[in-house]
Amino acid sequence: MSFSHPPDRISVGLIGCGRWGGLILTELVALGAPVTVCDPDADRRQWAVANGAVAVSERFDTLGQNDGLIVATPASTHWSLLEQIADLGKPIFIEKPLTTSYADAQAIEQLRLPPTFVMHIWRYHAGIRLLGKLARTGAVGEVLQLKTTRTNWTSPRLDTDSLWTLAPHDLTIAQEILGHIPKPKAAAAEWHGRQIRTMIAMLGDRPQLIFEISTRYVDKRREVRLHGTEGVAVLSSETADYVELWRGNDQTPPDAIQYERLYFDATPPLRLELAAFLDYLKGGPAPVSDLAEGIEVVRILEELRALAN
Image (cartoon, rainbow, N blue to C red; front, side, top):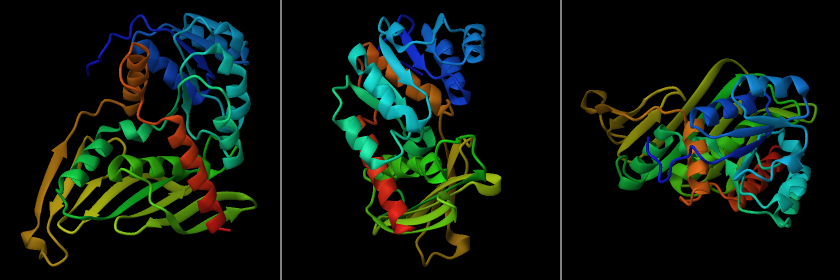
């Protein structure tokens, strides 16, 4: 893995050091970035120091000396938090989803924010980028359908439901592979009170996006399928280091299908997206998901929720 600029002198303020924030800290330390952690929980601050943070704090206003800020707090806190750190004037990398309502996303859009980017991690997955290349180069013919499956049991996220937790990944996978997020057409959901725990949604037409998300499956599934007129390409899981490609149209007999495995660099996408932010802070290209994309993802999620009502 190469960088336009070495990251070792770039300092980062990390806001939130829970389960996911802890993983972010570990990767930043591995990338050589000095990290100051801000978290209200004394135990998490102590953990951060033990795991490589150069400093810890309870207060946002101590983070202004850093080159950039990463926000890894619950999505329901993002609007108020961004209001508080906007005046620090440092580029911001914020975890997905940007927020949990379109009204809040529009309010964020009105803030006078420094450059702000959203951590849509699957756009950095090498397997997803390979599927995007196959789509663009015609390796499967005309792209007809993108189908994603994202299931597991429950979720550690307590501030929102499974739609907001899981579906941002599938929408941004479509953005990376198709170059756009298709328009929502239909959605069906499994409701538990006012909480969505499963959704099957259809978006667009030729190419069409179909996704299924659920936190009601005991077995964890992460599959991405790209169907075209001349073939099918599949990323079978988030940990696979290859894409399977079957060449053949809808009339090709099974014994005439051509099959190959296309291997890719399996560097963890979290490391790649954090490296991209560090590179940007040294003058490199911007991370792929800007604030506008984050707002659009929230808008589409709210539209899908309404379709499922």
